[in-house]
Length: 56
Length: 254
Image (tube, rainbow over all chains, first blue to last red; front, side, top):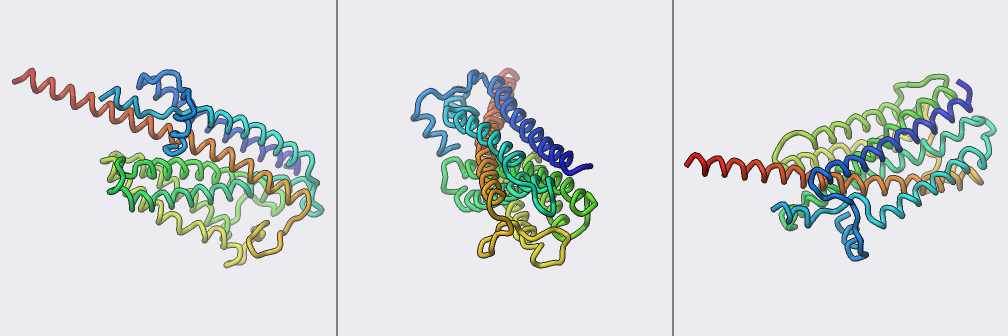
């Protein structure tokens, strides 16, 4: 494999892995949220958002 | 019970994480331009040097994630009796960081193999750095498997915390393996107290790539943490429903 092909393959695999993992994490959260009846995953006010940083 | 559970629920997306997500995408786009187009080819390695900008930050982030796992595990073990939530917050943080660390260790291994084929002429060599890195990957996979074993949540978390601390022993061994043993792998590109092996545009692109990967990893850890919380809520709700149905059944039979 040439240098350029190696670089493209390496970067490509990295992007695919991170994108796939990100989609899996977000969609798993949505699915479980729906199972629990939480619905739209939104926190509206800044106070709740600040709370989210202490409890991630 | 159900409303109380839902009242404590943290969502996986908030305004903050959305901003962080957009920032991660924008930073990644710029990192791609810098890494693939702007930074120069190396005199010796040629274009293959561009693997540096994903390979090296990936293992740095994996180290950072495993440090976070270990610190969180220590805090869980120390504070589980004092905190209202029995330290579950630290346990979730440990689990989410470890999973992201495993993903980036996997990326390090794959990109390293590809890079090795071009520079060394082989995908794999059982030298100290490569062997200890694959051991790190497998050990933390074991940690993640342990977290999924059926057990009382607190007992499972305690076992996982101990496993996390044992697994962490390998992190400094991986990092210093190139100094402690004669290996095919080159020494660290950047190291505290040592003159950088690279300079100029390559140096700054590498630092920028590390920053970008940090943002991406932070976004992933926050979301994964929240998903773990939701999984716990689901399990608690399922258990509450099971207990409720048993009680009703017992009442019916009496």
